[in-house]
Image (tube, rainbow, N blue to C red; front, side, top):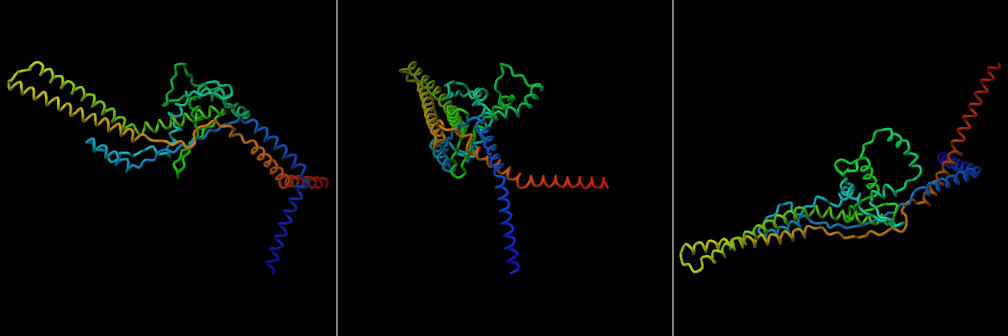
Amino acid sequence: MSEDSFNNNEGEEKGIDLLELASTLWKQRRKLIVWSICGALVGLVIAFSIPKEYTTSVKLAPEITDSKSSAGGLGALASMAGLSTGATSGADAVYPTLYPDVVSSVPFSTSLFDVEVTTKKDGRKMTVSQFLEEETKSPWWSAVLSFPFKIIGILKSEEEVTKEHKLDNFQLTLDESRMVEALNQRIVTSVDAKTSVVTINVMMQDPLVSAILADTVVSRLQEYITDYRTNKARKDLEYAQKLNKEAKANYYKAQQRYADYLDRNQGLAFYSAQTVKERLENEATLAFNLYNQTALGVQKTQAKVQETTPVYAIVTPATVPVRASSPRKMMILIGFTFLAFVACAVWILYIAPLVKSRKSSANKDMQESDSKHSE
C-alpha cells in the first residue's frame, strides 16, 4: 500500500506541475499571441524573399544485361565468323549505381554550359551558364552574408581570364568551378537499389529551362553510356571495315591482273602460259575468298554493335512543371509560428523565472552588504 500511495502522490505532483505550467502559459497568452504573430510575419518575409524554384523529374529504366547470356550470344556470333571472344565479353563496368557520379563529374557538367535554353517568361534564348549568371536570383540575406567575402575577394588578387580562354576540364577557373558546383546542386540523380530506376531531378528558377535542361541531361547520359558500352564493338567494326576495304582492293587488283593476262595471251597453248594463267586465277580466287570472309566479319561486328547498344525506357518523360517546388510558403509560415510560440513558452516558463530569481538574489546580496556597511 505504501508503494502505491507513493506512486499516486508522484503522479498527482506531475499532474499538478502540468496544470501549473498550462495555467502560467494561459496567463501569458497575450505575449504568446504576440510572439506567434511576430514569428508568422518573419516567416512570411522569408517565404516571399526566397525565389521560386521549379523541379522537373525524369525517370528512366536502363537495360540490365546479364554478362553470362551476353557473352554466350557474342560467342555464338563469333563462332559463326570464325573468331573467338574473351571471358569478359558483355561485362558492363558502368552500372546504374554509378550514374549519379557520371552526371556530377566535371566533364559532364561542363558539357552543359553551352546548352541553349529558352525562358518561359519572355522567350529569350541563352546558354545555361548565362541563365545561371544573369537570371538566377538569390534571397536578400545571401547578398548580406556574402558581402564580407566579396570585400576580401576584391582585396585579393584574382586570376585574370583572357578572352581567348578555352574551357579545360583539367584546370578550371574559379568561375567555372563555381558553375560546376551550382549545376551539381541543381541536378540531382538518384538510383533505386531494388528496381535500378534512375531518377533525375533538375531544379531551375524557370519551368521551361528546367524541362529543357532535364531532357538534355537524360539524352547526354544515354549518349555517354551508349558510347562507353559500344566503344569496343565500334573499334572492332572499324578494324573489320578496314580489313574488308583492303581485301576488296586486293581482290579487284588480282581480278584485273588475271583479266589483263587473258587479253594479252589469248589463243596461246604453251604450258608456261597455262601455268601463269592458273596461278593468276588462284590468286584471284584466294583474294575473293578473303574479301568474302572480311565482308562476313563486318556483318558480325555490326550485329555486335547493335547487341551491345543499351536500350532505355523513359518511365517519366520531361515535362514543364506547372507549380513551383519551392519555397513551401505554408510550411515556412507554420514552422516560424511554431518556433516563436515555443521560444515564448520557454522564456515564460524557464528563462524569465531564472532571470527574476537571479535579480532577486542579487538585490538581497546588495541589501545585506548595505546593512553590514551601515552597522
